[in-house]
Amino acid sequence: MPEQTPEDLLIVGAGGFARETAQAVAALNEVRPTWRLLGYLDDDPRLHGDVIDGARVLGNLASVHELTGAKVVVCVGNPKAYDVRARIVERLGLPEHRYATVVHPAAQVSQSSSVGPGSVLLAFATLTAGVKVGAHVAVMPQAVLTHDVVVEDYATIASGVLLGGGVRVEQGAYLGAGALIREHVVIGAHAQVGMGSVVLHDVPEAEVWVGAPAHVLRPVYSVR
Image (tube, rainbow, N blue to C red; front, side, top):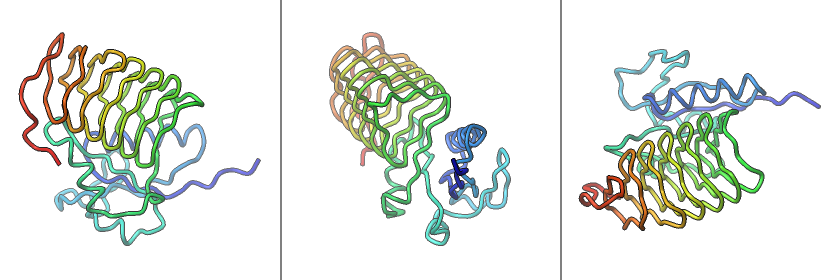
C-alpha cells in the first residue's frame, strides 16, 4: 500500500486551542503521515514570526488566500467570546473543501458517527453510535457524546462534558467543562451552559444556564 502524502495545513489562531490542535496533528502524524503543518495565522502582529510549540506564526488571517493549496482549521474561541469562530469562518469566505477535519488518534469515533469539515476532536473524545457533529465544532478532551447526539455547526463541547442519548446541541452553543446533559435535552442556539452544570430540561436559545440542577442565570450578552 503506497505511503500517504501529507497535506499542507494552516491553523487559524495561536492560542490554547490552536496549540492543542497542533499537538493533535503531531500525534496523528506519528501514527500515519497526514498533515504538514505550515504554521499558525493570527491577526496579532506581535506574534508574527514567533515559534509556538514548534510551529511558526506566519502572518495574519488574510494569508489563507495566498496559500491556496493548504487546508485550514479555525481554532479560536473561549467562554467569553465563543461566537468568534463562526465570525472568522464567515470573514474568510473559504469553500468547504478548504477546511480540514482533525481527529486525535486517541479519540473514538464509531463507524456510524460523522464529523463535519473544520471540526476538531481532541484526545479521548468519544462518539459512541449514530452521533452527528457538524462543521467547525470543537470537542475537547474526554467529552462523551452518546448515541444519536447531534451537535450543530460552531458549537463548543468543553473537556469532560457528557451528553446523554439523543441530546441536540444547536448552532454556536457552548457547553462548559464537566457539564452533564440529560438524554433528549435540547441546548438552544448560542446558549451557554456553565462548567459542572447538570442540565435536566431544554435550554432556550441565547441563555446562560448554571448549577445542579441547572437554571437560567441571564441572557447571553453577545449573540450572532
